[in-house]
Image (cartoon, one colour):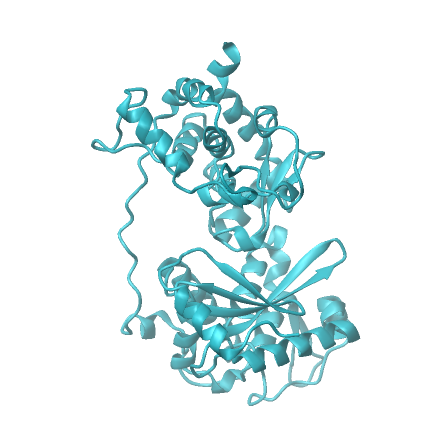
Length: 433
């Protein structure tokens, strides 16, 4: 039974204005409303073996192109039916398409989503007077498929372009699609560039004529969001961390352990606060943060050092918070200001020094501290950025993967020695006592 209605959907989107954290609201039957900063999205999630899969069905709202509550439920049912019946063409993938060339599609009915898939996986190119020629997909040259995943996420799972004929899409349609990333101008520009590439491919194959609706020349003269000036979080110097950890753990509070954990794992504050025991794999010594909790909407794996495992102790119930509220119990997370309050108190007592022109270090600043320590110890930028769960840039990651010969889970494994060494360094004076 549906748990939402149009009024509740509108209220949820309205209440998310100014809230940067992604909120997930269940409508039942694996359909979810995702809200953040005044925007809403419909998401369909299902279990695929031991994993969970998610598909963004479209934006929620009443604007043209948005999905109403009833349309979102219909879209969810359509996707569920496809899964139940199987998706032969999708599951066969490029290998079968390569063996069995499909009949050529007319320029008027070629969908944008089909061009994206073919650009990634390969397609048959008609040749006059000869057999069609197989054109390999770009994804075949991208080790680890990281860039292909980004293309699919940006162009197939979000917005409404995928189901539209290429010949009908204009610059206004592209602008509407890009509006999803208005609060992140760098990502918005990256997606625009990807759309421009897809249209260039479509035009070369005769699926549309005229100017590229996503070209940089066109968007240069269109209004768009401006990137806000970034004010860096004040960060403690790496060499001050070991002595600070001694005083921090001497407090013996939940907040002090949470802050120590945040420092040792280079995590974001909210990732620590919302952490539950079910995310911790003690056997493999890894903390697995699901896509829904990550800023980049991608699962993140954090190696857990012996120091970190000792810090968190024995596990509780799967849905209990690792760092619970002292007053409300394990079902609720610790107060978000508890960690920064420790640093302010330490500053007043003279236990730590100000940084960055007289500012007090903040919990998030320890991510910069970790990165600076990694730079000093000659760890590659790619390793440091992946440890911070930053979007490094697909081309950079792919180049790094090719250079090191690492793909998939190996990109996680290579970070383990760095994280163990950082943890050992940060706790060096604690262990020495």
